[in-house]
Image (cartoon, rainbow, N blue to C red; front, side, top):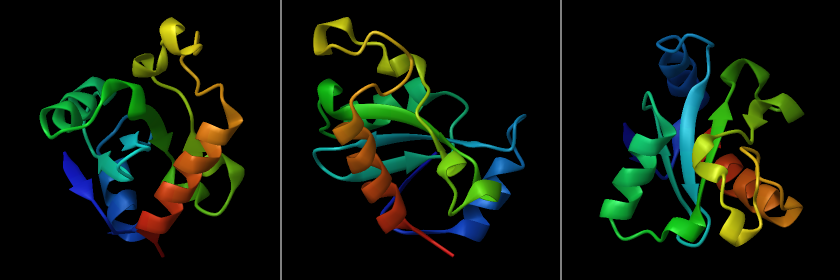
Length: 113
């Protein structure tokens, strides 16, 4: 697991080969604009960020598919940590489109080809 400000697409591709679906799990702190990648569970990345000053309501889990970089399928907004009825998010997906867009921005600022 690793917190990143910047990460090469090639590094994400290497990480994805260690997963069963050629994806990289990531958690984004939308308030602090932080990104943690490369753990077996989103919950582990979430806990890392909580232990380092993040607030639960700011954390969202996604899956990155490096082979789809530059396409809509690059980011999948799906994680058990996203189920938050108290915040109006009742599914594993990130339902708020503005939050999705912010997550996209943070990820695209960090990932470079």
